[in-house]
Length: 326
Image 1 (spheres, rainbow, N blue to C red):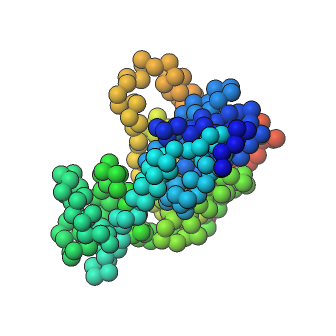
Image 2 (cartoon, rainbow, N blue to C red):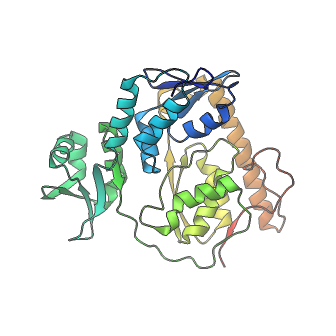
Image 3 (spheres, rainbow, N blue to C red):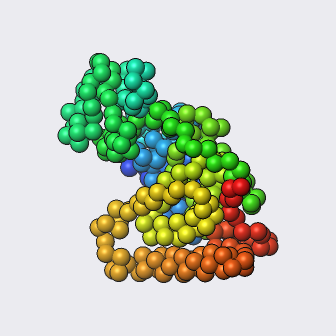
């Protein structure tokens, strides 16, 4: 029920304004983070955007459209437009109607749906059609292993995100992998959500944390948790050199396969025309040089603490976070 003392103003374009001075702001911020993207955060009013992608990610994490609706209506100052609630319900209902699974006949990948008409609709798209193999029956298309990620991206472009339930082939076991640092609570939570107790749903996902929150350390924890010799490193193109330096030093016995991601803004806007981008690149270059120096000194037996990827205000230097394989 709307209440003038609540912090949220939910607008018809699915943007959400959050009043920082409200006594329920902290509650609203924590709940919005599960299904909305923070757009602007000035002093008094924060702006969030509820997008199809943010709603699909929420659905993957286990939230329902009812959970989202309860949050925005329960924390709103004014009544929420029915069109907003209908859009939330529609977008979240799209996730999982297409599924990527292991075909029960061949153990290969297959795209399946309980709705043959939906499967027919997406197969008419030119890009998707090129990524689909033979039609196995009315509810299944064969999919080549190498097209798994590209197909999921193509389906997202069409507005039909597929639930990936195919799992992964078990790689060569890396015995004795151990993380030599204590994770903070939010880092442990992120790692547990990613691994999903080793179930078929685990082992993939997107880690979204602010700069300096320790994403590299969580990555090291993922290496130790999965305990496999091969790791595909997916991160921003500007962060990849430092990530490879850190990870290859931490686990020299693991094969690292870099997969750099270039954001749309980086494609559309030359990096030298943006002050914010220049500052980001300079900051990352300084971190990269520091990592190179620390790794080279470590080769000579001089271990320096690595605080670059821990939040500011840490109580005391700790042992450098590495994942070791015996």
